[in-house]
Image (cartoon, rainbow, N blue to C red; front, top):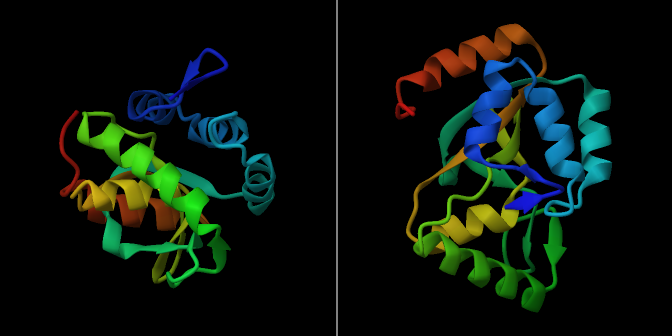
Length: 157
C-alpha cells in the first residue's frame, strides 16, 4: 500500500522500530488515505502508548472491534462493504501481497485489534494463521516482557 509517497509496509515498520520512531509510523499510517483513521491515531497518541514490533501474532488471538454483522465484534460493518473489501484483499494476499502490519493494543490479557480488521479477515480467508502487528503497551516494561516472549516465534528478516 503506497500513499503520499510513503510505503506503509512491514519493511517501513521495521525501519521505524530500528529508528525508535514506531509511534510516528503508527500515527502517520493511521492518518494516511489507505487507513483513513486519523481519529484513532489521535486517540492512541493521547493514551501515551509505548509501541513494539513488528511481531507476528496468531489471528485467533486478536480480538476484533469491527466486522460483519454476524461476527462477534463491537462495531458492525455493512455486509456488502465488508465482503467486497475483504475479498479484494484476500485475492491480493493469494497473489503474494503482504499487507501492512495491523495495529494492536495489549490490554492484558487481550490483544485488541484497533486497525486492520479487513486485513485480518482477508488473511484468514487466504488460509494464513498469523498477521504482522505493531503493538501498543501501557509502559515499556510490558512491551519488553511481551516482545521477549514473542521473539522466539518471529521469523528472521
